[in-house]
Structure formats: C-alpha cells, structure tokens
Image 1 (cartoon, rainbow, N blue to C red):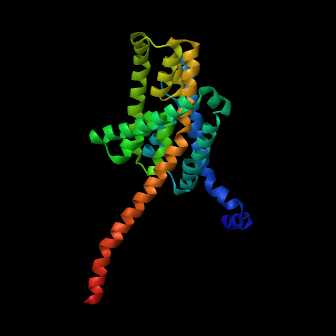
Image 2: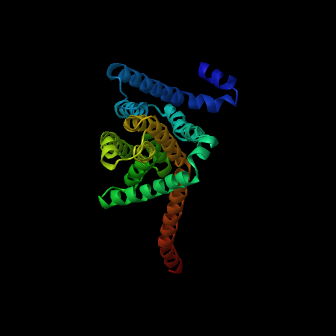
Image 3: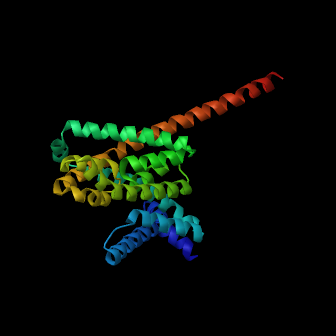
Length: 274
C-alpha cells in the first residue's frame, strides 16, 4: 500500500531520474574508490603506477564478477557508460586551447594527426596479423595511438566490445606504456635528440599524460612542455576517431542486415510460388 502511494505521489518528471539513481550512485562509488586507491598508491610509493581509470575498471569488473547486481542498477550504469563518458570526452578535448594549437604550428598539428591515423591502421593490422579479434585489435590500436585507457574505455561501447576485450587491451597498453617510459631515455642519448625533438617523440609514443611527463623529464623543461602539448593534441583525435568507429559499426550492421535479408528472401519467394 505504501509503495502504491509513493508511486502515485511521484512526479512524472522525477521517474526517469529515480530509475537512474542506483546505477549512478554505484558508478560514483567506484570512481571515488579508484581515486582513493590511487592516492594511497602515490602516498606509499610516490609514483602512479596504476592510474585511477584502470583501478576503476578493475573495481567495476570485480563487482560485476562477484556480485549479482539487481536490474535496477542497469539504467544508471548505461547512462554513465554512454552520456557521461561522451561528455567527459568533449571536456577532455576542450582542455586544448587555440593558443596552444597556434603555438604548436600547423605542421606539427597535421603531423600528429597523420601519425595517429597511421598508428591506428598499423596497430590494427599487426593485431589482426597476430590473430586478435576485430574488436580487441581495434581497442589496442585506439589505446596505443590516442590516449591509452581513456580511448579504450570510450571506444568499447561504440564497437560493442566484450569486457574481456577491454581488460586485455588495457593490460597490453599498460605493459607497452611502461616499456616505452623506460626505453625512451635511451633514444635521447643514442639519437642525440634536442629537447624539442625528444618532447615530440615522447608525446607521440607514450599514451598517458603522467607517463609522458616521466618519459620526457630527462630531456629537460622544453621536452616536458613539448611532450605534454603533443600528447594533448593526440587526445583531440579521440572524438573524430570515435565518430569514425561509430559510422563504421553502423555501416557494418546495415550490411549484415541486408545480407541476412537477401538470404531469406529467396526461400520466402519459393515458398510463395509453391
């Protein structure tokens, strides 16, 4: 009786928000827990070995694996997975100012754009050549070419990737990122790069901003500033790449639908003739 009265007294505009509330609250708890664990990690080790995004994904995976969540959590989780993530991507791209782009110059910006596109194509080709599935190879290519875990998490719902594909892509990207941070200082000495050149190399090859700072540090202040700028311009490619992936996935689904329709039409016509 109480439940019925509550439903009657609930305003129509409030119903959608109430349905989203459980999943949103759970997502916020996971995010805050990840930030807390990262703070503990930095306090104990003075380094950020595992980013808060990776920690959030690990916590979320553990909850989904160990706890049978009620259906009431699903709408809010999907809302955070789609809308909130898209807003975060827009805000991430908005962190690049036009002054920074002008300071970089059109040649550097176009070079970064070309490098990201080429890296995605080459990484995807290598992944497929090594036997990775289409979705996993796509996630690995986006993660290594754009902004690591953020790109993987953003691309996963666009291509409808499985959770195990996301986890595998994040693990591979994390290992490759650590290898690059450790190997880049050797390139500074072996290739005789200037601070600006080393900064560009660091910004193009390392996927996370904190790791870019760590990798570019041996090149001095100019290398750090240049590497950060290059890395942020790479982040700007996330939006266009996700748009292209979405259009490609939509086109592929239409082709599959047409093929399935054409495959059933002859049977239908032959049955009609009979």
